Structure formats: structure tokens, C-alpha cells
Image 1 (tube, rainbow, N blue to C red):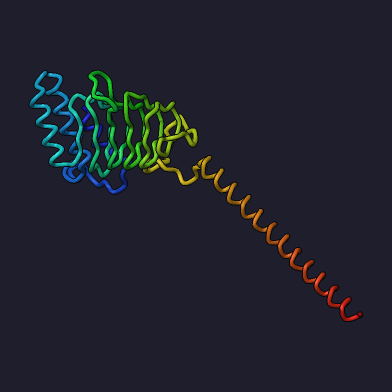
Image 2 (image 1 turned 90 degrees about the vertical axis):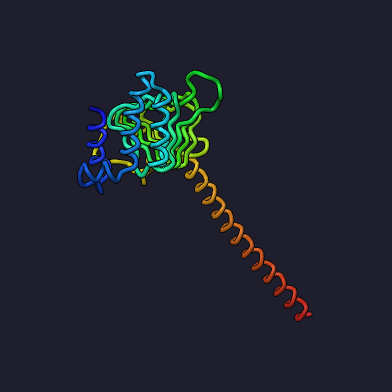
Length: 233
């Protein structure tokens, strides 16, 4: 059963989790997901008003809004949860982790597919916005507060506004979990380029100081020579 798998998956992703009772009663992300599983089934039974009412009730209780028509896979975990929005045509794969403030939103008012499709084993950091009918591949990491408006290939890490690829991630699951989709060892090409420019400017400044010092010494030497000539006369 997916709800059981959702609860069990919390242990692997949150060291603060102690038992199932605590997870069910204290984790708003899990509570919202239980509401979603029920409302999604009602939606499939064509009880759409009841499904929407249940999802609205869940939003009041948890601060998380998941449309009952969204398609969410197994072992989905929303950590902290507050402010998460998942739109009607969003599709989410298995083993996905999402933090607070994330939006899977649309970019148009036209009917049809207008929300993202998220692959398996994806981590979406706090405050990230993934917008439009784009595809996010398996094992992707989306950094906190990023805005993703274009599809992302599998095994990539993206950050920024708009999001850009900064590294490839391993296609294999490892014991290392990148909280908030951020790795401390990430080398951002933009940061590297800016640091190189700053280093070059520092070198230029040092060279200018040397030249200035040399010119001042030459000026003093010329002044001394002029004084000696005057005295000799």
C-alpha cells in the first residue's frame, strides 16, 4: 500500500523520525499525502467535488495544497511541508523528496497538460519553483529557491534563476543524501568565473601599485639630481 510505503520512507530521509505514530501525527507532509491518497481515489471514482473538498481541508490543516488529480508515485516525502503547491496535471515519480515552499505550477490558463512531470529519485530544495509542462529526469537535484522553466535531463543538478546545470549527479542511489538538493562540494561555473575575474583585478591592482611606486621613486631621484645641479652651480 502506498501510504504504508510513504510512512516507511520517512525513516530513511529524516533522522528525527522515531516511530510511525509520531510520523502520522506530527509530520504535516505525511498528513497531506494521506489526504491526497484518499482524495485521489475519490477523483478516480468521479466524486470530484468531494475530492476537492478533502484536498481543501488538507490545505487548511497542513498548509500543503495537492490537487487530487495529480499523479504521485510511491515513497513520496514532503519535509517540513508548509507552502507546497502541486498542480492538477503534475506527475511525480517514485522516491521523490520535496522541501517546504516548493511549487509545481503551470504557466498558462489553457486546459491540458500544464504542470511538470518529475522523474524518480528527484530532490527539490526549499522554495524551488518548477513551472510549465516540462520534464525533470531521474536523479535530478534542484537547488533551493531555483526557478526551473525548461526540462532537465537525468542525473543533473540545477540551481539559480532561471535554473542552470552546474554538475552531473550519479545515476546510482548512494547512502549520501543531499539535503535541500545542495552539495557542499558543488563548483558553480559562474562563481568560478567571477572569482577568476576578481583574482585578475587584484593582480592588476598590485602591478599598478608597483608601477606607481617606481614612478614616485624616479620622480624623487630626478628632483634630487636637479637639487645637486643647482648646488654645484
